[in-house]
Length: 100
Image (cartoon, rainbow, N blue to C red; front, side, top):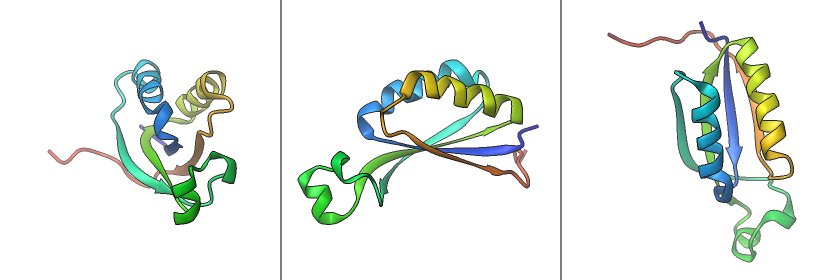
């Protein structure tokens, strides 16, 4: 049973590579991806328009994982996405399931 919800916030230019990596690493786990905006992104990573608006386009991915899967997935992401601006946080999961 999943214990954590891992949230990733990705620059759009690495979206496809990230989704491919998650499809390979996550196996049968279901995850979602959503276009979003990031606030507080490092100034050097923003276009001129984004600097004026104070936000940058991003992709948010959420995946439910066990503690062991979380550690393995973060290690994979550290190896494949160092320096790309990929951000993450993991929160304990209270409940998860499928309504049948």
